[in-house]
Length: 134
Length: 121
Picture 1 (cartoon, rainbow over the protein chains, first blue to last red):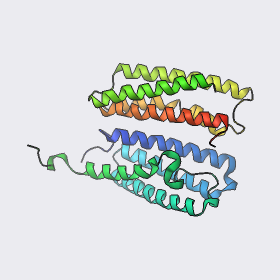
Picture 2 (tube, rainbow over the protein chains, first blue to last red):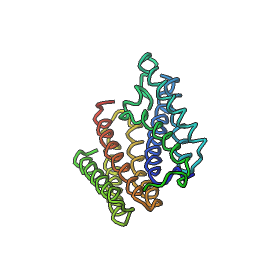
Picture 3 (spheres, rainbow over the protein chains, first blue to last red):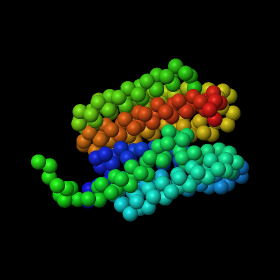
Picture 4 (tube, chains in turn brown, purple):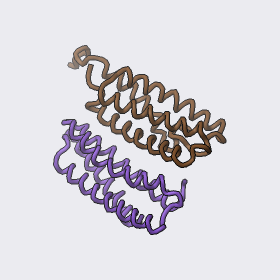
């Protein structure tokens, strides 16, 4: 098995790091300044931040199972919150990272967990078992 | 937050991203030139923090400046973390990290301009 944080995985971890920073800052500001306005949305915002931090660290350190769980929760989260934010817009006066399937962030939050899971699957195969190209 | 400085930073960040992308496409690892480029970017960002900080203290800028200040400080860690994370990888993917860093800084500056002018929420 190869390292999940090296090779192209470097870039994946870098993008995850950016989202960990973005989600944490966003949740921090929301909770510090106006938590009472929409506790559900801002609570979810904080939850998303924790998941991004977890995924970033797990991918960087090749903690495969943690990374798989974090990416899966993230994917379910972006689909669930994305749908919920469209159906019940009043519960989300101020967007979370996952609102509208991450449209405020160029839909990167929707694509990222899929890339993460594909990458985890690819790196779980040992290079020696791949057929040699002739 | 002055628009000319913001524009200079956006252009510089996109140049760093493009320059790093060339290294990735040519299968080159990061070298000293990338560190110099990131250093220039960091100096520009520090200058922006001083300028915008002074203007904020003078009462200019957004009415609720918490988010803006978060961006102003947060953006300064990107070149440092990008350099550290990219340098540890001695392959084409090292400068690839700097492509992400450059694009992120450009997007963050655009967002900061919106926050400063109170548009786009």
